[in-house]
Image 1 (cartoon, rainbow, N blue to C red):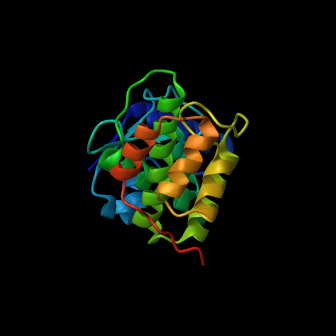
Image 2: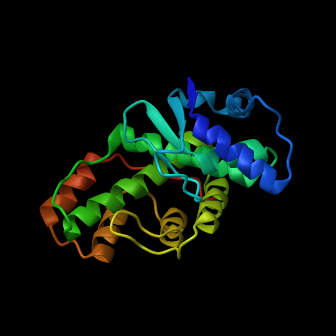
Length: 214
């Protein structure tokens, strides 16, 4: 199931004109064809310009259960660059990552504290690991290429934020760790979370994930 806003269609047409590419008139059907390979995700896809105000960085969100919001920039890249394997892998990983958030995030509310930052980071990293299992059968090589694509797509500097580790750090976690209590404690140390009870509760909440490092 897919919904495409008229503002997204307009955005794609503007981008196509800028790139001097001919994409035809029925862009909704073209998007549908491009997304045939993603049916296994089994969720409603909503291409929205308003969701992030026409942002230039490919972005997505699964904050509403069962629905994946995708911005106009992703839509444009999917339509305009059908042969870009790195882009498609990055999009696949984005979808897997966002739906992992829906399935098993740890809910915690303690605004603007190191404890909350710790939970945000663990949820993000868990979604990375789980997304890699979903779309790449746990293989890290295509995942790292997809994450590098996302890193290069950023307009601003790749850096840690309150809610997300940097892409460089997330790739480091994927390369060097399994998802388990050891990694969770590593994240706690990095962000300065010293709440032992919280660390233990978060560790018990998640099942371990072992990726294929070869």
